[in-house]
Length: 293
Image (cartoon, rainbow, N blue to C red):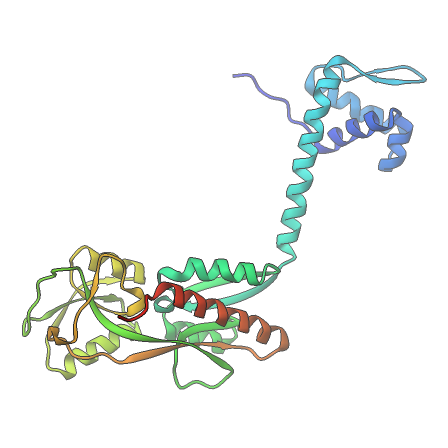
């Protein structure tokens, strides 16, 4: 296999500068280098390419036929290099903002929410963590994150109501279960608050249950339900296509409604960002939950 030469950006830049100035001295002045230093750079580039790029005389500089063909490539390489550096620097200049999101609040609509946030706040780099509400709220109280989206709890601090979420029992269409048989429960692993709500409702109704699947994320729970492994307690917005919310007369106890909220800091900048986060989550919720009836 032919080994390609390694091209140094500084050498390419010197070649283009000398070509444009038609003078080693003028190009050196523009780049802050001496005439001899520019000449050395051109010779190094020619050595790496194994071809002459320029014909030099005391009074003129002219490109060889190979140099004329190579000039377009050199310009293209420099343009790509400079654009990449500028883009990287622009991304590094974005203000970081750490956002923690409950797995049940994230759901399948999270990509749309994050895309909306990027459109609203392109100057901010959102650092997103997904987990359980209790875990994320503890991180918020420690100061680990700037804002958290989770179930409303008795907590102090600035908050914004996002949307209500009606909990439902969900299963694959035609899933066979009949009371008083134990409910084959699909849920997140403890200490998930939604799992605790489901277990408490079943226990209070005197309905037996057994765990058949525990996952580390809502997507895993959705997959297990779709595969027909059992019944899960999920927010209606997380009932995926191909599965159904079980009717009230299915023999399972009623479930409460929840409210998801955004807790955030109260500095001026954080208040402004919080308003956009709240708007993005509300818009995402509206798009992901079909109207009743």
